[in-house]
Image (cartoon, rainbow, N blue to C red; front, top):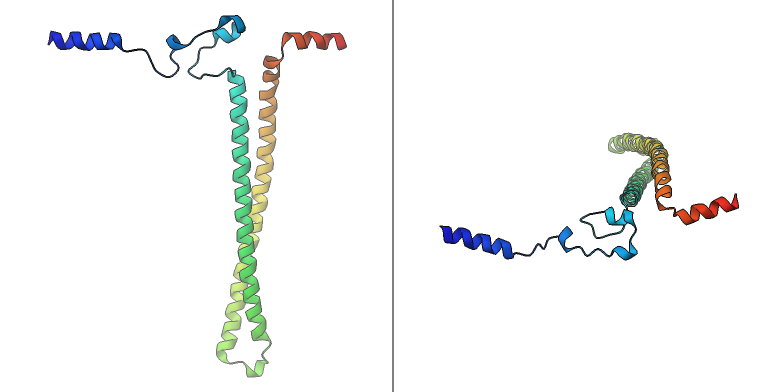
Length: 176
């Protein structure tokens, strides 16, 4: 029993501390870094500041929203095209039936004419609903755009302060 414990303790002591982002493995090169950069300890191997990462994530989220919107628009377009095609096909069939003089129409043809009118009416209602839904979606997207613009404006102001170097601020004072 003691042998097992001593072996496991010995093996654990010999294991190198190799894991992602281990501080013990990080080689700090202090000569090229400012004090603020040396204070950042992270698992990520990057020089991006948290504010920059947040901004990048916000941009990616925005891009994803734009792609989802475009996909939605394309689906609306496909549905609209299909509905229009179906309506036109039914109208063509109805025109063929209407071209037959009323005296020569069979009871079945008159019945089919009524069915076609009802089907066309339903498809037109469906298309109207689709158009209304697209308009509501467009208005919602406009509101989201305003909210996102405000969010990015708020997020960008602090980042501009962080990324400006003291030398550029001093140069700006000479010009004013």
